[in-house]
Image 1 (cartoon, rainbow, N blue to C red):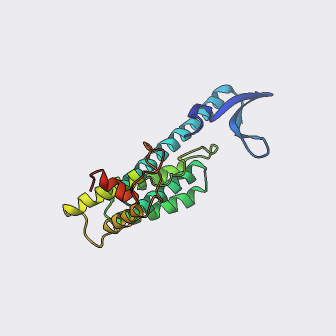
Image 2: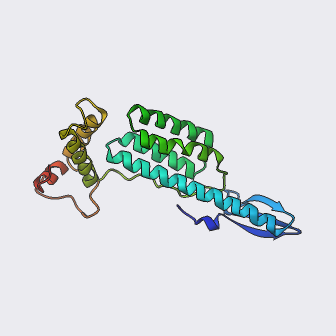
Image 3: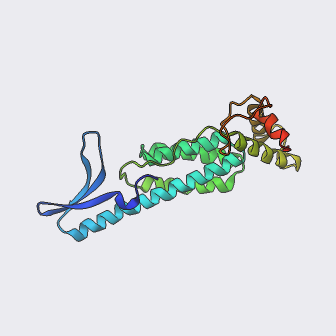
Length: 217
């Protein structure tokens, strides 16, 4: 998540005041002042408060990333990406009310799809996001890389297995997503290479053909 929590700010003495100053600088080269106090003890309390906000933010980002990964596993890629987008907004400290509204919409969408557990995990983050203080932007989750071929194939196989045993119905979102990703795999080599490969395989015309020849479904 970028710089460590302990490097969020520091205490420096200015004349007869103890000031809590951020490490990061704005475009004009100035560091943010989180407040100046009459004694070092008060400044330390303020510094610990800033560190606490940083820890809360780190926890929020970790939960959002985990829920995004869980939804991607289910084939709900567009909702997964929407959560990552919200996480990036949290990391860069965009307006908190806007982020809360976006997450609220995602929660409602998940509830409509009976993804109650994941919806609840995101719902409890809303008051946490509204309570955190702006303490300087962080690197946060990086934008998700293009879906790799092996990742896509794994998702299709997972969804297909659920379809076979009756957990997914024809006409459902998951069934449509399975067909969509399968079509992507059949569309030549437009998906990213698996991490274990450094070049496109030969003697096959698409990723789907490649994985099928390896004996997978």
